[in-house]
Length: 276
Image (cartoon, rainbow, N blue to C red; front, side, top):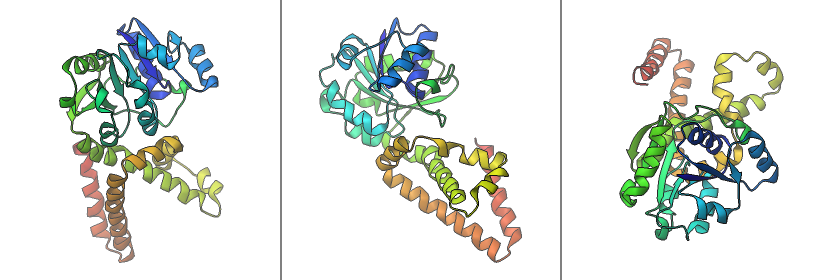
């Protein structure tokens, strides 16, 4: 098939590498708005050709929207005239808002997907070899798609070595919130807590594995994550409430010197890794 990828940063660029590596695509087109990034994409040889949006629509069997979630919504009106055989797929971290905003004219073409993989990096240089292999991709609300579109997307993800899970979009957003969106909110909060201290440089000078692990994702794109928090607002607010309850509990245990209860609280948290 011919694959056209809109957005060639971490997700789109890595997918371009994968479909070329496994000979899934006979040709890979790319669309990039930013002129500087366009040259990067060409220098990195992520795609065979960078084209305009009309060429990409007309020449692609599969169109991939690998852009921030709000930008996905903005692109949808530009795809209303795609051929009925052309598959459209997004890679966004939220699903319910996107699915609900796909125009009915192309809903059968549009497969909502979320590969559960990522890093804090962005831009064409963030594209990684073997990025998708061994990870899970969630496909949502497939009952609204024509079967040949589902088959096309399934083939791509299977051939790049991903596990496929089918899920309702609303259910996905709840799960993704706890596994990804809330951790990002916590990481940004931790980073801002340190930066708000009177001597953040001295604190950071002592940074070891724990701090670095927890603060790493605070390097992620603020624009991209603002869009995600906006689209998954209700679930994030609920998860923050639950997290705040746990912080209040640990504060209470420490304040009241209930150290046996504190140890039990920590031991309960340890059991998470029995199911990971």
